[in-house]
Image (cartoon, rainbow, N blue to C red; front, side, top):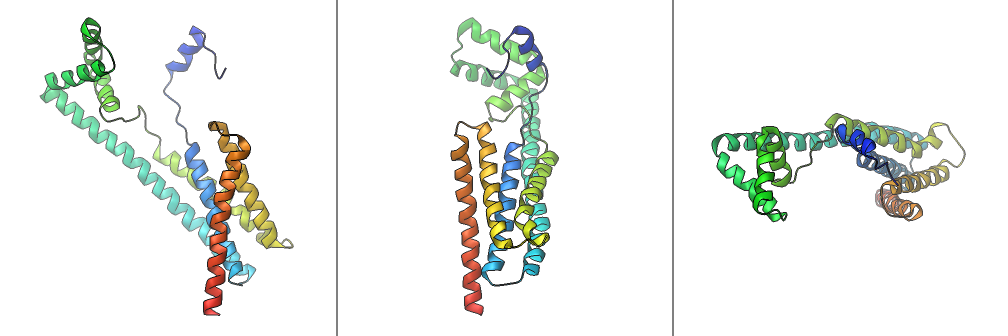
Length: 238
């Protein structure tokens, strides 16, 4: 079993606020960091440029694209929070101005869930007796909003760190001047793709090898496109 179902354990588990999950931010940043940085490596190598150029463009991509992704994630997540605050203000105003209408909304919501008669009225009374509970119910049931919104700062930081860590792997053979850097960069990046997918399977029903293979294929396809683009540009301009 995933967790204990004794009354005491349930009470402890439900007492705190729901834990926020930033897994998607780590996966998103990690995959994109490895893909885009290796795409730079593949594109530069495909164009026949030097290892120094690989490092310059790769480092620029790590910082600029990583920050851009983090900033975009921050703005997108903050928009969710701002929207919830706006809708909360709307519901607060409606409860003040048309309480009977808002009460009827609660009644119809729970009637649709199967409550009827005295049980329905009891549920409506309990929910509307507490203003905060009333508002939260409307946000969840009428607008489909989650009870808690993830931290925009933590979401951005997760994306940025994952981008830097995974995106640095394709550059590492060039940084330390290893032999056959292109080959080592390709192999290590492929392993990163597979590792990200395999770890991701811990939060899904997909087998680890299948999840790893799926991410591996996505990453390699992006790298192949970048390599082909580099070769085409080199051929056209060369």
